Structure formats: structure tokens, C-alpha cells
Image (cartoon, rainbow, N blue to C red; front, side, top):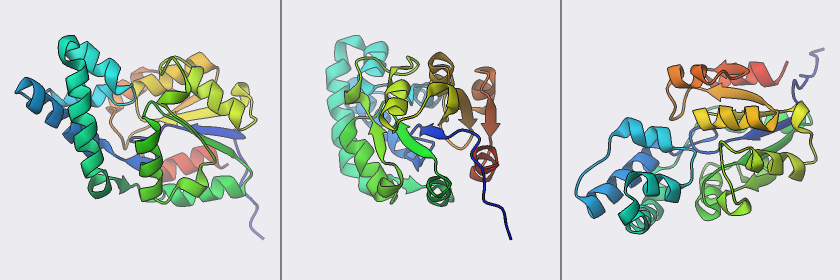
Length: 218
């Protein structure tokens, strides 16, 4: 008889973009459309990828403060028009979430994404029923790397930060986990580079979904 898997952390909070759903191509293309439309040029892709995980408005304010509102409007219009065609699933993620639920894990998402596109991304990848709590940009006044969104997600699923892990693909995810007193796990299939993720000193690094499964389910 095969033993049931055991949870290393009873509460698991996930980033969304680049972790549970493959939205990286959509996000990069949306940024480039906004910069071309408003400023007449594209932005360095590495810089864009480093922004993923942070609120859009903050990134546009950093890049071009005098045009932040125009850039935001251009981004959101193009992003919404192309979401259904460009959002992709990551192989194995749905099965992992299902197995975590079966093992009794408290599962949530904490993302800097706005609620409507976050909800739509989960719908398109058929993950909605596997993630009972979703904390989005609208739920907190401050955002990653501030720990507030992560702590709110833990609170909403009835967990404890000291017995929880946050899983994400970006440096801000690891930093937010540290600040929240949670284990931070960096995944390498999203927007962040391996060097940057490892330099942030996560508790562990998962190059693949299979590796993440091994970390989460003993």
C-alpha cells in the first residue's frame, strides 16, 4: 500500500503570473504595445521581465512618470483584448494543486495583478476551483515585496506564516516571503532569471513543476 504524501508546509500561497499560469508572453507584449503606442519605442525586455510581480502603475510611474496613465490605459486595453488567445497553462500545475488539496493543504494566491485579469487567467487555465482564496492588487494598499498581501492570504485560509510557504518566480516574491516570515520557494519557469532568483536567497529553488512537487509533498 502506497503511503499518502505529507505536507512540508500546511499553508501554501502562490504567485500567479509565471508561477501558476503562463502569462509572461502576454505581459511582455502588452508592455511593448503600450510603449510603442505612447512613447514610440519599445522597452528592454529584461527590464520588463524584472517588473513582473509588481503593480503596473508603479512600473509605468518608474519608467515614464509623465505618461504613466496613458501607458496604463494602452497596456490594459491591449492586454484584455489578447488575454484569451495568449494565456497558457503550465503542464502539471493543475495536477499539483489537486494533489495538494487532497493532502489537506490550505492553498491561496497572492498576486499584484488586478482582480479581473487574475480571475480570468485562472478560468482560462481551469484552476479556479483549485485556488479557494485569491488576494489581488485591490485587496491591499501595499504590494510585494511588502509582505502584506502574503499575510492576508495566509489569514484568509486560516494558516500561520511560520508554517507557510510562498512560491513565486520573481525576486520580489522571495523578498516578500522573507518579510512575511514564510519559507520562500523560487521557481524557474517564469519571468525571473535563475541567477536573480537564487541571489535572493530563497529557502529552495524548483527548476520544474516536478521539482516543486517533491519540495511540497514529502
